[in-house]
Figure 1 (cartoon, one colour):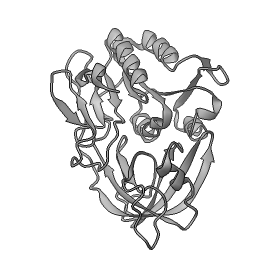
Figure 2 (cartoon, helix red, strand yellow; figure 1 turned 60 degrees about the horizontal axis):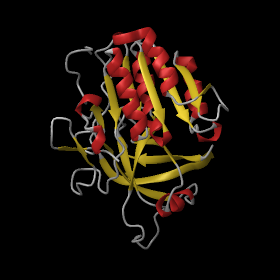
Figure 3 (cartoon, helix red, strand yellow; figure 1 turned 30 degrees about the vertical axis):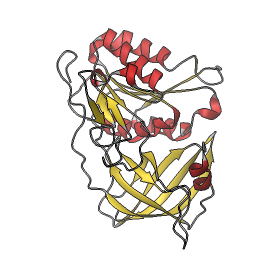
Length: 288
C-alpha cells in the first residue's frame, strides 16, 4: 500500500455465504461480554473482517417473531481445518438488548440461525511496514484473524485494544496467546487497570510516530475512536482501513439500513461495499 496513492479498500470475499444453522458448542462469559462458539455444517470459512448474521436466541419448534431480525456480528475466530464439511466459528458479543439476552441463554446443543460469511474483507497483502491494529468494543473481533494473516506474511503486527477497564477487554486472553505467532498485544484502559492509561489512540500515536508512513493502520470500534485513528494515520501519512459497524437488518443489501455517507458524496452500503473501507472514503461527520 502507498501512503499517498489509493489503497484497496476491500477485496473480493473468498468464501460464498451459506444460510444455515450453528450448533452451540459453548457460550461463555468473557469479561463483560460473551464468547459464542458454533459448529456449522458446510461453513466455508471467513476472510479477516467478514461478518455473519446470527439469530436472536436459540431456535425452537416455533419460529421466533420477537425479536424477528438477526444481529450482525464479526467473525472472531475461524476454527478450521479447511476442507472439512463441518467447522467451528467463534463470535464475541455483549448483552445489550432483548436479542443478545436471548442469545446469552443458548446452551450447548442448541442451534441458532446463521447467514454468512458476509461483506468484504480486510486486504492483507501489499504492505511491508508495521501493521498497527487498533480496536475497541466487540468490534475487536475483526482483528484476531486479521492479525494472524498479517503476521503470517512476515509483517510486524501489533494489536492495540482499548476499553474502559479490564473487564471490558473481551477476548484479551485469546489475543495474548497470539504472542506465539509473533504478534504483540498492547492494552489501553481509561481507568488504568490494564496497560496504558487512556484511550487506544495513545499507544497508536506512539507507534505511528516511530513508523510513520511505512505503517498501515487497521481500526474498528466506536465511530469517534475510528475517526481519531484515521486522523492520526493521516497526520503520519499512513494508510488507514476501518471496519464500520452500522446497524443492519439483512446483511446483503436489501434493507438499506446500513448506508454510510461517502466523502465524495452519496452513500455506500456497509454490508456490501464494506464493512471495510479506506478511511478517506468516509464522511465521518455523517456517522452516528
